[in-house]
Amino acid sequence: MVNTPRLSILMPTHTRVDVIGIAIESVLSQTFGDFELLVVGDGCAPGTGDVVAGFKDERIRFFDLPKAPYFGYANRNMALREARGELIGFAADDDILLPDHFELLSKCLDGGAVIAHSQALWVSTDGIAAPFLTNLEIPDELEHFMERGNTIAASCFLYRANSLPLLDAWPEDVPTAADWRLWHRIIRENPQSTVVHCRQPTLLHFSAKWKNSRNSGMAQLGAFLDMADNAKWWPSELRVQTAEGQVEQQAYAALLRSDPQGWIAGIRRAAHDLTVHVAWNDLQFLRPQLNASEDQITAVSAELEFDALRTRFRNLTCWFARERISVCQGRTQGNPGGPEGTL
Image (cartoon, rainbow, N blue to C red; front, side, top):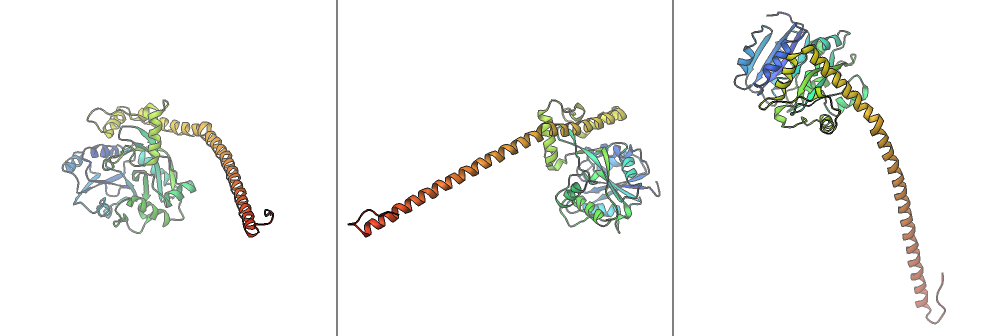
């Protein structure tokens, strides 16, 4: 066994015995080979241990633990207490890491940063992939990430083990999104260091089975899926058909195995072209249409405001008329023998 690996990779697992083998295979295929893989069984499904043992790789350490509360954050901490790497990474048991994932992320930390993240291709339950575009180097995107919501898969992150006082830093008292809170803590407790962004997709992130949602409940992926369903220009590389009885991970893994370099280059190129085309479409059509709509709204608002003023004027005129009649009638009743009262 490697005594002092540079990188410790955490892979929790609970029910995905059907695809964890694909996830482990993608870790073992990394061009960055100086690592240990900590597979953390959180009350895992029967057969998981057999899948893990089948790889016969001394870099794998399996922790077969009883189910912990929530998403098993306590079990993750238990494994991390034994982590030996100076860098800590994460690999979901249903994700596929591209072979250069950790090599690219580790280079992002060479300048002294304590945490880096890459881009994920998020895959729908029917095999459509789309890039998630958050870049935490941009201040307003970092502010959104810190204050409003998480749009970055946990597998995208790599951080230094010494960025926090203790390795077992996953919060155990929250029911969900503990990864998001962990990234918050690392960023806030290391203000001297900026977050570094790796500007290309390095992994395939799949919709969690328990969510039972085509877009994993993510609005950004939902918007991309709407495009994929209606646009003829959607890249074919980002639309993978699954055979009957096959899950998305199996379909994508087969393509990756068939031609690793060529397929990865193709899917990255397709993701780049998709991003550029969405931006072009926004500038060429959507933004001008939005501006025109805003002009129309302004004109309509002005017209409605004028109509409202005209209605108010008409109402005031009627009110004055009624008041005049009322006064006139009062004068007439007060002097029945005289001439009709006037204002």
